[in-house]
Image (tube, rainbow, N blue to C red; front, side, top):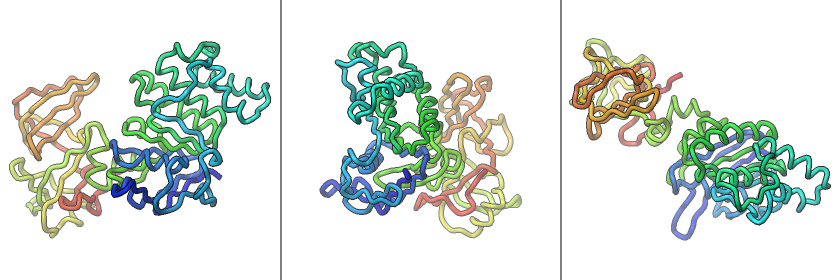
Length: 366
């Protein structure tokens, strides 16, 4: 069984705590992404799963088997690093065949496996080329193939696409997901790139400063972030978060945003929770879940920048803690310095406690 259970996992390096009591269950055959900024503990977590690091506290179980004391070579995992590790004096064929050969596989089986993995990763025309003369993109593809050819039940990938070009990353996102489905592997993928996590993973574990922030499907963490960190980190651009206070109006409960005015009435799911609540909140909405209006009721602010990115335009408005962004179609006009009115989709609004940063009950969508 290739289920992975991390139970109260802690890792310290001297006085520095890299991972703080992490509990996570990764299902058999699941594609789990560990997502977060540099230094958040995701690679340390993967290294402990692989057996390269020993936990300071807690347990790692594969199925019902505790991995304490089990060396990396006996865990049955495949590992692909950020910096590909292949034999440059060998051909592509020899690199791919290396693992099965070391495991004593029959020559006919090795040839069959090499042919299949080369076809899957589009390496067939390069099988007899020496690795030393190949591009970084191809070398990383070979590195993935060399681990995948053994069909490990658990496949660990640590930022495998971070050193390759954007076009190649787009291709490999599809190929890695296809590879995982074909072999039905449990795959753990470390990345700081939310696009990789959102497009490939069944679930995402978002981490920051050694703390697991949220676990959920890509759409769950996008639609309903558990806290301010996830709200800002997930999404491109991240969620707009404007400070304000709940206030009663003749139209219902609104959020008073100070110099930006007041919002439209909050939906019932939020109004019932916020009514009578003291203190400031953060009014959150995705840039994609708002529109610009020339005038009328909404959040008025000056346009401070306009980014035209192909099929869409990102309009920046306001300044400081009142800054926000709105994503619109590229044919929509917005001029620097002009005043514009932002109209969020109130059904998609989330509200967070300004002190703790946690999402407030009722702040769910979809």
